Image (cartoon, rainbow, N blue to C red; front, side, top):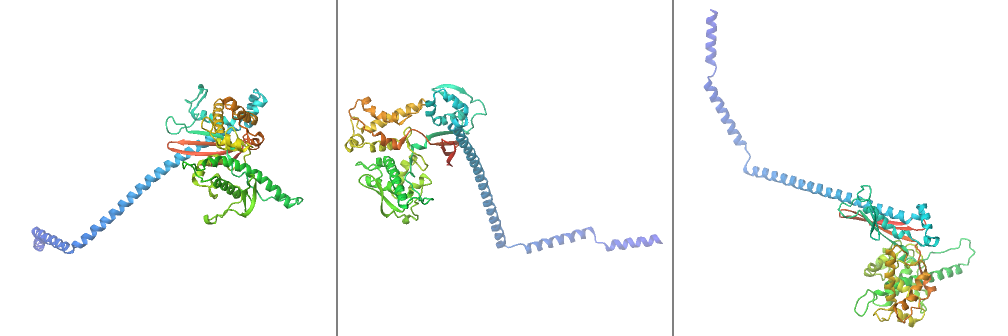
Length: 463
């Protein structure tokens, strides 16, 4: 009975369940409906175009950002490389300066040097200027080699501890030049300061008179020295030159004096060549947006601010100028134009001065020019054999006394030694070291001015 009931229930269940074919048909209809529904909700053609445009904009922005990132990465890489090269060149220049300073200050730093020099005799040791050989020591450390008159003395080039690398085979990492700062014209020679008497014992008028007399002497020296540099730049009949007349040169020198003196009164020179304050105002620099300094110049480049100093004139003489407190011009390194100006001014007779300094001689040059050319040859020869050209002013003046006879001319050079000795000398108070560091294509230059008496750095800067 129970089995009959179960059989009837299973039969009824099979009658109520859909067949497999019906299920497939139902699924097919559902799928077809879903497809029709998807097509009905698809975006239109305009919507697809906007989507495409937005995608292109995004791609363009990403491309620009990628390009900018790549450029910044490349630029930063180059900047890092340049900074590294500049830093290495900087330290190479600094190394050269330090080595040169050891040589300049050898007498103070190395007591043994004094004992060695004493073997040469007291006077010879005193006259020997070791600073002239400073860069020879620098070259030894740069290359690891030392030569004397073409003979190799030592070779440490294979030692890694000697020298430094410049990044280019065969190129030393540093080099230098050394020269006497005293061979340059001091732009501040005629500078004055407002002087007062703390004790109050001196009469102010007398104090002012003393200061004026001192300025006249210094201004006369500056006039002669600058005149030697500037007068050759007076325009000739061929059109060569910078200045139209000698008056322009004189005005420029006076303007330099007025720039550095403490007063605001214009300076002038009388018929006898004496300098004095003649009254009136100094040049007006208001049109340029500044005023006369009325104090010492801090740099040589400052002279370009002075009325009458053109860029052309400055570029020609800038290496012959200084602003440091040098004393007399050193005849062993001074520019020939400066020496000519001083020597010609020392000739008292105007006719003799014209014949010696301005009129051409048998060679086609003025006799003083022939003598100076020979002087330059003698200076170069003595320096090549590690000798000081002139160890005393008497020997310097004797050169000009003996030159006419040695050259077989009958025209004497009547140089007044007392006048020359006031402006020229043979001792070096300050030395300029110009050290250049090299790494690859990068170069750094360090310029230092050293006081030879103390060995202290007076000034330095990097270029």
